[in-house]
Image 1 (cartoon, rainbow, N blue to C red):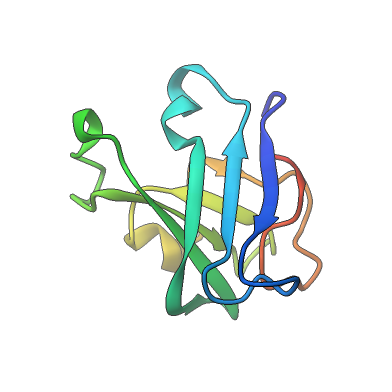
Image 2 (tube, rainbow, N blue to C red):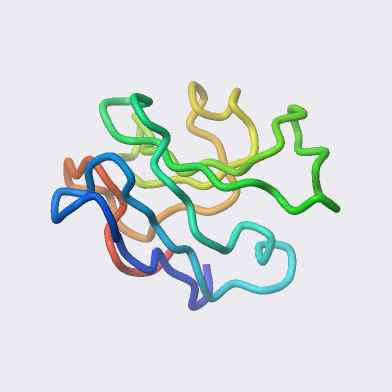
Length: 114
């Protein structure tokens, strides 16, 4: 998907522990709303990996399931990191952007393209 990417991990030490952030950048147009800094959701894991969240813009508060935020999670099917705005997508491995490569067993998103 174009030249966007997971900008990398910061905070929470080298293992990306609690307080870690992920920055998504590079996309414009319909995927531009997904860009920004996502923060680890304390104590939340899906498919054995951390979940990251960011508030959605006020003008876009009506996400597909009424959830006022965007999420990054690891797909159980492909092992790729996925960006969505719906909690129901977590169990069905659906979303709007996927990391270009599988996570390789990583518990947090890699640097690189989506």
